[in-house]
Image (cartoon, rainbow, N blue to C red; front, side, top):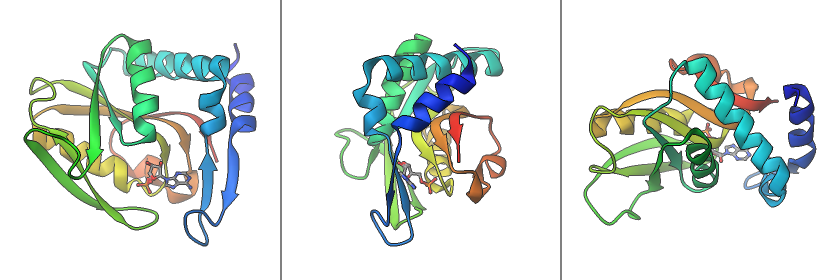
Length: 179
Ligand code: AMP
């Protein structure tokens, strides 16, 4: 399937919600993409294929950021054929963690990764649903380095290009649609 055709199918499944969760934010609701079995499968297949072909190798792990990054990340890890590691909001993981605080497009947060979630030195692809300011993505990158592993790139369904964060991130960014 042509990427442009798939891009159009993805775009038609995304619903813009103005002023959510705060005035001035145009929230991209991708629950319709998850609800369509065929579209979600095609999307994750294409994102995995593009990521691995452009990287030129398979990552050792995919790390997904809570909560929508879990959905994208596990599907992507399955498509690539590697394990999944969760990056969670503070206080949710039961064993020893590394932490990182950061600013969001709306508010601020801390994320955590279990110290022994993967062998040190693992090559990790970071997955989330959407890239906006890049605060979450940069924090995830730092977190993986703190754990002793090696972030090698990012995969998103959506990149909001107005923030310029795709260029600001030093690692390669793979996405299905840009606005
Ligand atoms: P950022 O750190 O600014 O790049 O924001 C990315 C994170 O916030 C992702 O986990 C997204 O799920 C969420 N997010 C930020 N802006 C939006 C938006 N306009 N629509 C949907 N999710 C968003």
